[in-house]
Image (tube, rainbow, N blue to C red; front, side):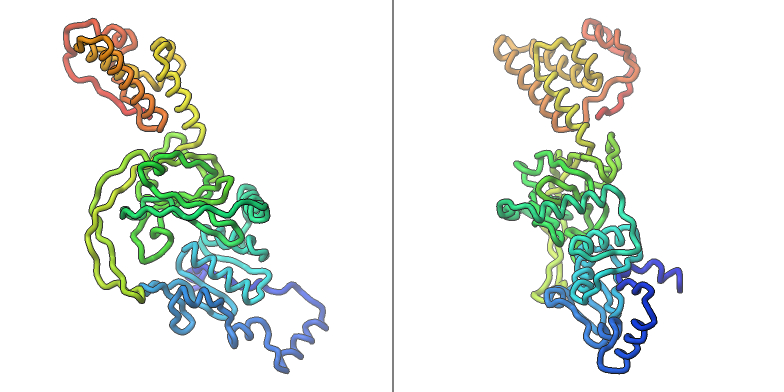
Length: 399
């Protein structure tokens, strides 16, 4: 039982520090009259802000999402939740603030405690039970500074009218005490724009942390204009396969490289939030890349070299060995262009291939593979050899 309780995500008012005997006598006197102590007051008149009452469905002391999933339980002198849902955590902190808990103690999973610490400190509550890292403390300071700094009204939230699979878009993640961050959709024009910032958190969650939505994956970054959450089921793979292995606190870039058409089943709800059925809709799903920001800087430099037709291939590959496969691909295009009679057509063809390859490099897409069993000398002379190889050479993808 004790082990199970230790795993419960909980927020409670911190115990008062040791006080004088006269202060304790005053408390006993208060109990004998009509002034209940904090826990008793919360049981007798539990304060829950109206906005939270409207957001959840209350059954006794339990609060649920409209689909029936339990959000949290109000025990009067403590609040518990079975989940790490960001919106639930912010709601618990709002309740604690409304009840006058100037100092709270948090317990449970690491992510719950981290999110609760940040939400509570954002509204001025002291927190016990979690020791923030230097990066997390700096993040709080930067957020408070942004909230106090004068500036233009935040941009309107962008909306993508097209359906997406498992929330494959960048969505707003408003936080208490912070100006609402911008939200970006994943349209072809904007979704492929490199979104940069400091990695704060990432993980699997229902889309926009709403239990009635499909499972998805989020990456939360801190930008100069606020925090931003990017959603997409492929983000988990992108992080696992990242070449630069970004970690929390690193400056990263996130970009949607491609889209594929999929069919998904979308639940349908009535006016009260109950699921009444589902329907199949056409949607699109993004393929993502997540790397440290330096990775994209290096790719941008390599793309500039590739675009410059005056740069000798051997010199370019010496500067950027990762471009070897790309230059072999460009050389194949030059050979193919010789079949064109018009010299201007040949130049335009090669130039268009060069530009397309450079754009791909700059976006961070996987580079062309390089044959493993072909030596540098063989590669330079292979175009002059007539005899084909005995078998297909093995190759490996390069990013």
